[in-house]
Image 1 (cartoon, rainbow, N blue to C red):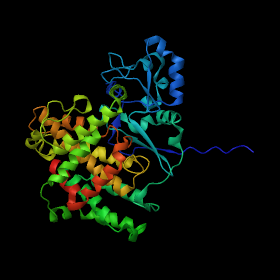
Image 2: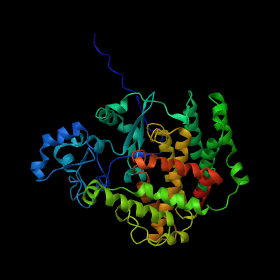
Image 3: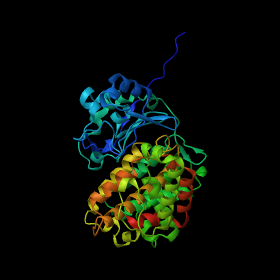
Image 4: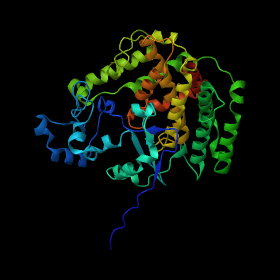
Length: 424
């Protein structure tokens, strides 16, 4: 009797019509990105005989995993001076490692479909340059065959801790957030303060008593209550401990040890350097330690105090559009919870999205201070978002117990709202 083959899930391209993308050959994704290789990738590289052509190994192993080798400056060994890929030039796009082909698309299956999210680590995505996303569907379908597990049904995300989602609940939550973020009658601060308010209230609600239809009614009530509730619940600035935890969260998102660097320094020295940098971010005094290959070199923690919140920037409209587009794409691309975000339940994933936005705002203000700007510019925010979204859903530290504990603390004293209003 022949074995029945599983049926591939249908693909749902990100339903954010405002988002566009085409590759513009900037080469940034080939610099300072670690590319993990699959067996099929290794077979292609071997057949292309690159080691003989370049006179050196083109892969490296670390802790049992094989990666593309990087130069000392962090660039891929196949990155040419003109910013293009040598594999692509000599053999064509489809002969590159599948991770390189897919970027910036992110394939996230659930129990019904494969959702196509998109990474804002890509400059063209952040600048919203190129074609409509649906125009890439045939290529996405082809590339997904190289990652077959992304086309097979996996679990539906939990609604909350130890609470499975009933039919329609996750869609109702995603639609609520999307409608809220798309509202044109809200200021940028109220938009993201409102998102924090929704996340905090869902975290406090006794969801076991409001399931299915009643949960949908709950999210509709929350949506209708904004912005009146925000006006009746004003907040002072973030508390000192909340700011310390925010800086810790920023560090966790910036730290990105390169394979060649980790192998050269050894596990002990690498871990010690990470610990010292983390403590420096916690203290928030003096010079900012070296992170993200010099992103904040020369910056001082105290300088951020002179940079106003993003809502006071002359570029606030462009910043608002960018951050709203990012948050909507994260939710609708299934990158905020479930398989797209460490298997987290939806309520906790929504809280993590709010924290990520606060981290973007903090980093943008720090970049503005380093660059001598009076306000955070749209370029500061784009650069900050590119770093913060760089490893979302893929960096174990961001799905760790420590990250969960940070979010638990931010649930106290309206912490999520306070850190958002502090910087946004």
